[in-house]
Image (cartoon, rainbow, N blue to C red; front, side, top):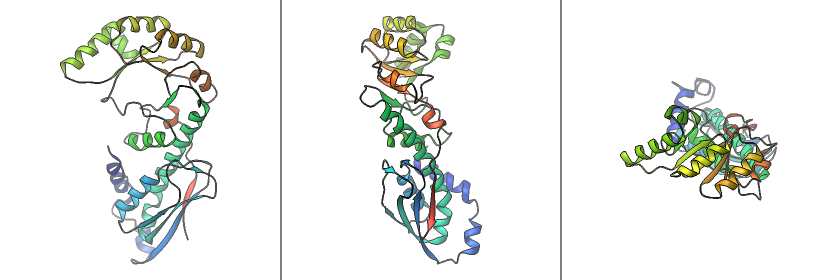
Length: 277
């Protein structure tokens, strides 16, 4: 679902048959102005989405943007001013804040990890652990924070995980079946496969025919050994049990990517408000 569709459905969900509070107490042609006030320190994300929300709701609303997505923000900063029909500003208020607060929280969490691994080869990846129907928005926030998007869904990359391997009857059968499927359906998708041990790594290297090995729940010590064994033959990704406290140790192993589901599903939204002026 693209961003315009997400916004359209979010407006329908929130407004229903009308913003009756604004319609009842604000005269029809009343004009006003408001500011987006920042109340937390972090990384700003969602300004571009807010602009789309205002425009979709009322194309006559005018924004004066002071801070763009990716900006470092502090308490008291003003991200933008919006002016136009007061009722339109009020109707859009909560949806704008819901998106911007969550997106800024994701961008901030991502940026913290990016800073911790700075100077290493590791890139921070998101996962599919996103809010249903809001993946496009949340993955946009990850990129704003300096991270990278993993696959968008089940359709744009082959990712053979432990359950796939077990149901397929082993690593070799899973890889061979995947390659046959792609050839049969004329699809050109990258293949990633999960390794649960050093022995798995060695078997995958011997079989070949894949693009990336996910090293799941490896200790930093074993991860370093695995990365050395793989020796750049394939891309490497670390996953599982990685957090702010230990991510630097994982990054220093030489791994290419570190995927962290928490940056989209265990974040604290940044506090901000839309205030009339």
